[in-house]
Amino acid sequence: MSIQIQQHGSVYKIELEGPLDTAGTAAVNAEFAAHCSSKPNVIVDLGKVSYIASIGIRLLVAGAKAQSKIGGKMVLMRPDDLARRILKTTGIDELMPVYDNLQDAAAAFSAG
Amino acid sequence: MREQSTTLARPEAESPTHAARERSFQAVVTPEAVTAASEWAKHLAEELRLRNEDAYRVDLVLTEVVQNVVDHADVGDGAAPLEVHARVDDAGLRLTVVDAGREFDPLSVERPQRPDSIETAPVGGLGIVLVREFADECRYERQGERNLFEVYFALEPEKS
Image 1: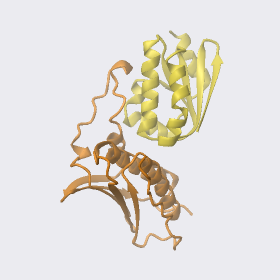
Image 2: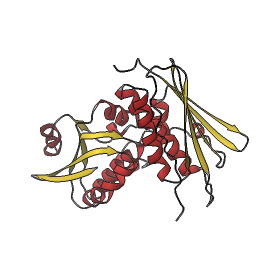
Image 3: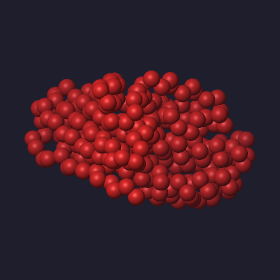
Image 4: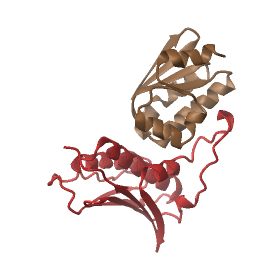
Protein backbone atom coordinates (compact mmCIF):
# COMPACT_ATOMS: atom_id res chain seq x y z
CA MET A 1 0.00 0.00 0.00
CA SER A 2 1.40 3.39 -0.89
CA ILE A 3 0.44 7.03 -0.43
CA GLN A 4 1.41 10.02 -2.53
CA ILE A 5 0.47 13.60 -1.78
CA GLN A 6 0.48 16.32 -4.42
CA GLN A 7 -0.50 19.94 -4.10
CA HIS A 8 -2.88 21.38 -6.71
CA GLY A 9 -3.21 25.08 -5.93
CA SER A 10 -4.85 25.33 -2.53
CA VAL A 11 -5.98 21.70 -2.58
CA TYR A 12 -4.04 18.51 -1.86
CA LYS A 13 -4.58 15.27 -3.71
CA ILE A 14 -3.81 12.16 -1.70
CA GLU A 15 -3.42 9.18 -3.98
CA LEU A 16 -3.71 5.81 -2.29
CA GLU A 17 -2.64 2.68 -4.09
CA GLY A 18 -3.30 -0.90 -3.00
CA PRO A 19 -5.79 -2.54 -0.66
CA LEU A 20 -7.24 -0.61 2.27
CA ASP A 21 -7.33 -3.74 4.39
CA THR A 22 -5.82 -4.12 7.86
CA ALA A 23 -2.21 -4.15 6.71
CA GLY A 24 -2.67 -1.58 3.95
CA THR A 25 -4.46 0.88 6.19
CA ALA A 26 -1.79 0.49 8.87
CA ALA A 27 0.88 1.23 6.28
CA VAL A 28 -0.55 4.61 5.25
CA ASN A 29 -2.39 5.66 8.41
CA ALA A 30 0.33 7.80 10.01
CA GLU A 31 1.06 9.90 6.92
CA PHE A 32 -2.60 10.17 5.96
CA ALA A 33 -3.65 11.25 9.46
CA ALA A 34 -0.77 13.71 9.82
CA HIS A 35 -1.63 15.40 6.56
CA CYS A 36 -5.36 15.52 7.23
CA SER A 37 -4.86 17.13 10.62
CA SER A 38 -2.52 19.85 9.35
CA LYS A 39 -3.32 20.84 5.73
CA PRO A 40 -6.88 21.79 4.83
CA ASN A 41 -8.77 20.64 1.75
CA VAL A 42 -8.05 17.18 0.52
CA ILE A 43 -9.06 15.07 -2.43
CA VAL A 44 -8.56 11.37 -1.79
CA ASP A 45 -7.97 9.55 -5.06
CA LEU A 46 -9.28 5.99 -4.72
CA GLY A 47 -8.67 5.09 -8.36
CA LYS A 48 -5.88 2.68 -7.50
CA VAL A 49 -7.43 1.30 -4.33
CA SER A 50 -8.21 -2.33 -5.03
CA TYR A 51 -10.20 -3.11 -1.90
CA ILE A 52 -11.76 -1.31 1.05
CA ALA A 53 -12.65 -2.98 4.35
CA SER A 54 -14.29 -1.16 7.26
CA ILE A 55 -10.87 -0.30 8.64
CA GLY A 56 -10.26 1.68 5.44
CA ILE A 57 -13.57 3.48 5.93
CA ARG A 58 -12.40 4.36 9.44
CA LEU A 59 -9.27 5.92 7.95
CA LEU A 60 -11.37 8.09 5.65
CA VAL A 61 -13.84 9.13 8.36
CA ALA A 62 -11.05 9.96 10.83
CA GLY A 63 -9.30 11.98 8.11
CA ALA A 64 -12.47 13.87 7.24
CA LYS A 65 -13.10 14.64 10.92
CA ALA A 66 -9.55 16.00 11.19
CA GLN A 67 -10.15 18.14 8.12
CA SER A 68 -13.31 19.53 9.63
CA LYS A 69 -11.44 20.49 12.78
CA ILE A 70 -8.92 22.59 10.85
CA GLY A 71 -11.54 24.21 8.62
CA GLY A 72 -10.98 22.02 5.59
CA LYS A 73 -12.98 19.32 3.89
CA MET A 74 -12.36 16.00 2.22
CA VAL A 75 -13.82 14.72 -1.01
CA LEU A 76 -13.32 11.38 -2.72
CA MET A 77 -12.49 10.60 -6.29
CA ARG A 78 -12.61 7.62 -8.65
CA PRO A 79 -13.77 4.74 -6.44
CA ASP A 80 -14.40 1.59 -8.45
CA ASP A 81 -17.88 0.04 -8.52
CA LEU A 82 -17.42 -2.12 -5.43
CA ALA A 83 -15.77 0.69 -3.47
CA ARG A 84 -18.68 2.93 -4.47
CA ARG A 85 -21.10 0.31 -3.17
CA ILE A 86 -19.17 0.16 0.11
CA LEU A 87 -19.27 3.95 0.43
CA LYS A 88 -22.99 3.93 -0.24
CA THR A 89 -23.73 1.05 2.14
CA THR A 90 -21.91 2.77 4.98
CA GLY A 91 -23.42 6.18 4.19
CA ILE A 92 -19.98 7.69 3.66
CA ASP A 93 -20.96 8.99 0.23
CA GLU A 94 -23.44 11.30 1.96
CA LEU A 95 -20.71 12.77 4.15
CA MET A 96 -17.96 13.07 1.57
CA PRO A 97 -18.84 14.00 -2.00
CA VAL A 98 -17.61 11.50 -4.59
CA TYR A 99 -16.34 12.65 -8.00
CA ASP A 100 -15.27 10.90 -11.16
CA ASN A 101 -12.26 13.04 -11.97
CA LEU A 102 -9.80 15.57 -10.57
CA GLN A 103 -11.34 18.54 -12.34
CA ASP A 104 -14.75 18.00 -10.79
CA ALA A 105 -13.25 17.18 -7.39
CA ALA A 106 -11.12 20.36 -7.41
CA ALA A 107 -14.14 22.44 -8.48
CA ALA A 108 -15.87 21.34 -5.26
CA PHE A 109 -13.44 23.56 -3.36
CA SER A 110 -13.62 26.61 -5.60
CA ALA A 111 -17.41 26.50 -5.37
CA GLY A 112 -17.01 27.36 -1.72
CA MET B 1 4.53 -11.21 22.91
CA ARG B 2 2.05 -13.90 22.15
CA GLU B 3 3.07 -16.23 19.42
CA GLN B 4 0.91 -16.23 16.37
CA SER B 5 0.24 -19.78 15.36
CA THR B 6 -2.01 -19.23 12.43
CA THR B 7 -2.09 -22.11 10.05
CA LEU B 8 -2.64 -20.87 6.60
CA ALA B 9 -3.40 -23.94 4.61
CA ARG B 10 -3.56 -23.16 0.97
CA PRO B 11 -6.57 -24.98 -0.44
CA GLU B 12 -5.57 -28.01 -2.42
CA ALA B 13 -5.81 -27.80 -6.15
CA GLU B 14 -8.71 -29.90 -7.30
CA SER B 15 -11.22 -30.01 -10.04
CA PRO B 16 -12.67 -26.53 -10.50
CA THR B 17 -16.27 -27.71 -10.31
CA HIS B 18 -18.45 -26.79 -7.36
CA ALA B 19 -19.11 -30.35 -6.19
CA ALA B 20 -19.49 -30.13 -2.42
CA ARG B 21 -16.13 -29.52 -0.86
CA GLU B 22 -15.02 -28.47 2.55
CA ARG B 23 -12.08 -26.43 3.67
CA SER B 24 -11.08 -25.04 6.99
CA PHE B 25 -8.81 -22.49 8.50
CA GLN B 26 -7.55 -22.10 12.06
CA ALA B 27 -5.96 -19.19 13.82
CA VAL B 28 -5.48 -17.78 17.26
CA VAL B 29 -7.66 -14.80 18.15
CA THR B 30 -5.18 -11.97 17.62
CA PRO B 31 -5.22 -8.98 15.25
CA GLU B 32 -2.97 -10.96 12.89
CA ALA B 33 -5.80 -13.45 12.39
CA VAL B 34 -7.68 -10.85 10.35
CA THR B 35 -4.97 -10.62 7.72
CA ALA B 36 -4.44 -14.38 7.74
CA ALA B 37 -8.16 -15.02 7.23
CA SER B 38 -8.21 -12.54 4.37
CA GLU B 39 -5.28 -14.31 2.69
CA TRP B 40 -7.02 -17.65 3.13
CA ALA B 41 -10.21 -16.22 1.59
CA LYS B 42 -8.19 -15.06 -1.42
CA HIS B 43 -6.71 -18.54 -1.89
CA LEU B 44 -10.15 -20.09 -1.53
CA ALA B 45 -11.60 -17.72 -4.12
CA GLU B 46 -8.75 -18.57 -6.45
CA GLU B 47 -9.31 -22.28 -6.01
CA LEU B 48 -13.03 -21.92 -6.62
CA ARG B 49 -12.41 -19.60 -9.54
CA LEU B 50 -14.85 -17.10 -8.19
CA ARG B 51 -15.76 -14.06 -10.21
CA ASN B 52 -13.91 -10.97 -9.05
CA GLU B 53 -16.97 -9.53 -7.37
CA ASP B 54 -17.66 -12.75 -5.45
CA ALA B 55 -14.00 -13.05 -4.45
CA TYR B 56 -14.11 -9.47 -3.18
CA ARG B 57 -17.21 -9.96 -1.08
CA VAL B 58 -16.09 -13.30 0.38
CA ASP B 59 -12.80 -11.67 1.42
CA LEU B 60 -14.56 -8.57 2.75
CA VAL B 61 -17.19 -10.43 4.76
CA LEU B 62 -14.73 -12.90 6.28
CA THR B 63 -12.37 -10.04 7.15
CA GLU B 64 -15.16 -8.18 8.93
CA VAL B 65 -16.47 -11.23 10.79
CA VAL B 66 -13.00 -12.18 12.02
CA GLN B 67 -12.29 -8.55 12.94
CA ASN B 68 -15.47 -8.64 15.01
CA VAL B 69 -14.30 -11.75 16.84
CA VAL B 70 -10.93 -10.13 17.55
CA ASP B 71 -12.63 -6.98 18.82
CA HIS B 72 -15.30 -8.65 20.95
CA ALA B 73 -14.24 -12.16 21.90
CA ASP B 74 -12.48 -10.91 25.05
CA VAL B 75 -10.42 -14.06 25.32
CA GLY B 76 -7.89 -12.72 27.79
CA ASP B 77 -4.30 -13.86 27.47
CA GLY B 78 -5.04 -17.41 26.49
CA ALA B 79 -4.42 -18.73 23.00
CA ALA B 80 -8.07 -18.83 22.05
CA PRO B 81 -8.70 -20.62 18.79
CA LEU B 82 -10.71 -19.33 15.90
CA GLU B 83 -11.92 -21.66 13.18
CA VAL B 84 -13.45 -21.01 9.80
CA HIS B 85 -15.20 -23.83 7.99
CA ALA B 86 -16.06 -23.45 4.34
CA ARG B 87 -18.49 -25.63 2.47
CA VAL B 88 -19.08 -25.05 -1.18
CA ASP B 89 -21.45 -26.76 -3.56
CA ASP B 90 -23.23 -25.88 -6.76
CA ALA B 91 -25.51 -23.44 -4.97
CA GLY B 92 -22.98 -21.41 -3.12
CA LEU B 93 -20.43 -21.01 -0.41
CA ARG B 94 -21.14 -21.23 3.31
CA LEU B 95 -18.58 -20.01 5.81
CA THR B 96 -18.93 -20.74 9.51
CA VAL B 97 -16.73 -18.80 11.89
CA VAL B 98 -16.40 -20.41 15.32
CA ASP B 99 -14.79 -18.93 18.41
CA ALA B 100 -14.85 -19.64 22.12
CA GLY B 101 -14.99 -16.04 23.26
CA ARG B 102 -17.70 -14.45 25.35
CA GLU B 103 -21.19 -14.54 23.93
CA PHE B 104 -21.59 -11.84 21.32
CA ASP B 105 -24.16 -11.66 18.57
CA PRO B 106 -23.05 -9.04 16.04
CA LEU B 107 -26.51 -9.11 14.48
CA SER B 108 -28.02 -7.86 17.73
CA VAL B 109 -26.18 -4.58 17.36
CA GLU B 110 -28.41 -1.91 15.93
CA ARG B 111 -27.33 -0.48 12.64
CA PRO B 112 -25.61 2.84 13.29
CA GLN B 113 -27.81 5.81 12.46
CA ARG B 114 -26.79 7.62 9.35
CA PRO B 115 -25.04 10.71 10.65
CA ASP B 116 -25.98 14.18 9.47
CA SER B 117 -22.44 15.43 9.36
CA ILE B 118 -18.89 14.23 9.43
CA GLU B 119 -18.49 15.75 12.90
CA THR B 120 -21.07 13.35 14.37
CA ALA B 121 -20.17 10.32 12.23
CA PRO B 122 -19.01 7.27 14.18
CA VAL B 123 -15.55 6.12 13.21
CA GLY B 124 -16.31 2.44 13.73
CA GLY B 125 -19.19 -0.01 13.85
CA LEU B 126 -19.49 -0.39 10.10
CA GLY B 127 -18.10 -3.91 9.73
CA ILE B 128 -21.38 -5.65 10.43
CA VAL B 129 -23.14 -3.25 8.06
CA LEU B 130 -20.85 -4.49 5.30
CA VAL B 131 -21.41 -8.12 6.30
CA ARG B 132 -25.18 -7.71 6.01
CA GLU B 133 -24.84 -6.03 2.64
CA PHE B 134 -22.27 -8.28 0.98
CA ALA B 135 -23.31 -11.72 2.26
CA ASP B 136 -26.54 -13.19 0.93
CA GLU B 137 -27.48 -14.62 4.32
CA CYS B 138 -25.99 -14.42 7.78
CA ARG B 139 -26.96 -15.85 11.12
CA TYR B 140 -25.56 -16.15 14.62
CA GLU B 141 -25.89 -18.96 17.10
CA ARG B 142 -24.48 -19.55 20.58
CA GLN B 143 -23.68 -23.24 20.78
CA GLY B 144 -22.47 -24.30 24.22
CA GLU B 145 -19.46 -22.16 24.96
CA ARG B 146 -18.92 -21.17 21.37
CA ASN B 147 -20.08 -18.42 19.03
CA LEU B 148 -21.01 -19.56 15.55
CA PHE B 149 -21.43 -16.99 12.84
CA GLU B 150 -22.52 -18.32 9.50
CA VAL B 151 -22.54 -16.47 6.20
CA TYR B 152 -23.77 -17.71 2.87
CA PHE B 153 -22.94 -16.54 -0.62
CA ALA B 154 -24.95 -17.56 -3.65
CA LEU B 155 -22.31 -17.86 -6.32
CA GLU B 156 -22.57 -16.77 -9.90
CA PRO B 157 -21.26 -19.22 -12.48
CA GLU B 158 -17.52 -19.46 -12.21
CA LYS B 159 -15.26 -17.52 -14.50
CA SER B 160 -13.77 -19.42 -17.41
